Length: 114
Length: 115
Image (tube, rainbow over all chains, first blue to last red):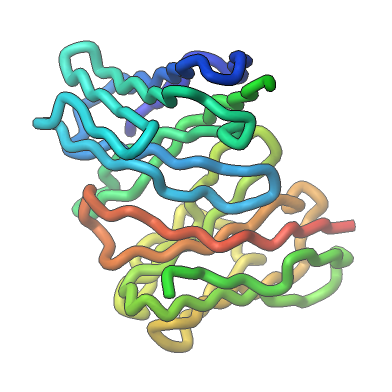
């Protein structure tokens, strides 16, 4: 099964800066990789999905990259705001027999300071 | 409507109690999931229902019993739980199951405390 590592448990940055979060996986390269946001005591919310043949995906201030050679995805939030403070989870497929299930990394707690 | 609802929001139960968690979605999704999440840990998959049939049971103890009465509803029946079962229980749904591209929609969760 896949092992997912998100580089740091916590990241603190100043408002207006770009936050960069890392997700590394150890086994086979998944066809898709997803990023979710989770606020305390709430369920995760889907943000972006990137396919293995896509180098980069953007959505407003969010950007995700996917490097299958490095087995790594980077998640960027530009012009960060205090409202971006949350835990960000990467998730990818983990085959369980003939079906794929989603396995989540431990997440990185991002704090954006005003 | 892209919402998954869960009731109750909070639940406190004793180890001899029987209770149920409920989940509902009206997005026409054919796959529904139960996850368990402990503090500062990622969600851990417990069960998957696809087309109202149990597709995956991640070796969950029998004191947790899932039920899918119809395509919109998912229940989790709890009986004789242990204090270590205290956690946030998340329900999720997706259009389909078994495809790596499926994104999941999560409910707000039920915060369970077992005394």
